[in-house]
Structure formats: C-alpha cells, structure tokens
Image 1 (spheres, helix red, strand yellow):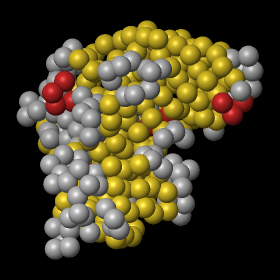
Image 2 (tube, helix red, strand yellow; image 1 turned 30 degrees about the vertical axis):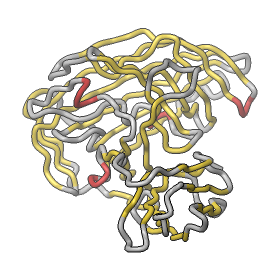
Image 3 (spheres, one colour; image 1 turned 135 degrees about the horizontal axis):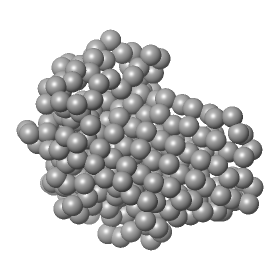
Length: 336
C-alpha cells in the first residue's frame, strides 16, 4: 500500500532552461519510469524561499536498500477521469492524474491514514501545477470526494483544499552533485474525512526540488499529520527521498524488433512471455536496481516462470536472440 506522502511525490516533472514548468516538460507521459531512494530525515528542513537560494543536502544519508520504482501508464480505471494517467509502483499503489496545456490535477488513489490503507476518489481534482509555472506562480483549489477503507469495511466522504506554489529558485547540493537552475514547488493539501466509524483530518506538505532535464523531483521533503476521533493526538511523519539519477524520466523502448505478449501483468504467481517470432532465444529479468534476477530460455516461442519468490515491485525484461542481440524490452509488475 502506498504511503500518503508518496501520493503527490511525482506530481510534477521536468524544467526547461529558464526554470519554467509547462505541460510539455512537466506532465507525465505514458511509458516513463522513475526510481527514488529514501534518506534520513533527522534535522532536515526545507530551507530558504525566494530567488537565489542555496539548498545544501550534500551530506544527507541515502538508504540505497530503501528504493521504490514507479511507472506511468494510461489510466484504465473507470473510477477516475479518462483519458488520464496512472502512476504505479504495484497494483495496489496507484495515483491518478489528468493534464492539459493549462494545468495538471491529482484525482486520488491509495493513501495511508495513520497505518491504515485507504482509497480516495476525487469529484473535483487537486491542482498540482498550473502552466506556465514560474517563481511565485500559485493556485488554490477546493477538493472533495469519497474515501474507502477496505480493512475496516468503511466508506465515507471528504472535503478539503489543495494549493501549489513555485516558491524558490537556486542551487541544490546533493551527494550526487550540485544542480543549478533549480526551482522548488511546494504542494499542500488538507483532507477532512468522515466515515461511520470515525472522522479526522490529514494534512500534507511537500517541498519538491526540480532541475532542468528531470521529470521527477531531484529531492523531496514530505511532512504529514493525521488526527482522528479515535486517536485525537496528532500523528506526524516526515519522509525525505531523492531520485536515482539513472532512472529519471526513462521511457520504455518502443522500437522492439519482435512483437511480444506478456501476461498476466501484474502477476501474483507466474508470468508468460509469448511471441510469434522464432528469433527469441532467452529472456533476462532484472529488478528495479538493475540486478539480474534470472534468465530463461524460450521453448516453442514461449517462456513462463514463477513470480512467487519475487518481492512486490517493478521488474524489467530483455529478450535476446541466439547471438545475444536485444529483440525486445519492457517491464512487468509483481503484486502478491
């Protein structure tokens, strides 16, 4: 289940040289993939706003084992606006967006209310960007919709508001290097929910730092607070993540030499790759970090393998011929 702090983690994307967000350089595109690492949050603050700021996180500790991969696909869930896009890390970890030349909106998905998983469905979307977006560009929107908590068999409604502002430009220092021409986008959201069992409020604030050429933030500080009628003492959490540079805005290879069918996808027990071409010889499977998981041999133009021992997440495959040349690449999701 996706933590709420991640529901807006990738709600914005890259920049042009003048640090201006537009739909072309900012909005999601189907087929893109992203990877983030979690970092230590102790003592981390958002830093200064305004023009010419310097944000120095060069000594922050990165947990390379705490890595999450995301993929962007065309939305097929009729509970959310179509056409639209779905941002997923597993089958149960999805957020939904729409975009046009003037704005991008978030329409809900999976969140955590405290430690309990829930699903939000917006009837009025939350702005995550307005275009063109330069320093001090901002907007505020009223939100509302329904909330479902399957583990407690609860359904209810929510109202609230969301705001976004580009509040700073400057230089960002990370363990991976120094990035100039960076713009910081601050996104806030308040959700007041009511169910038969309980009511409460979730507040969320993200500071996302974007640089020219990136399509997810280089660095994100996310702070959330939950208060409910069952637990009136506020529960707060701060999470810090940074992108894995090699994966920023990577798009799947669409120039495959052969046609390939991959099913079921997502998979819980096993997966099958099938092709009409007799050139396919082997398939190599890698995890989101690039580590090879296994290799399999095609028989009668087909290969199937178990996913029972694989952890939930995104995996990548490369189909090769007998001469070790790549014929097709892509990805699949394991969701137990």
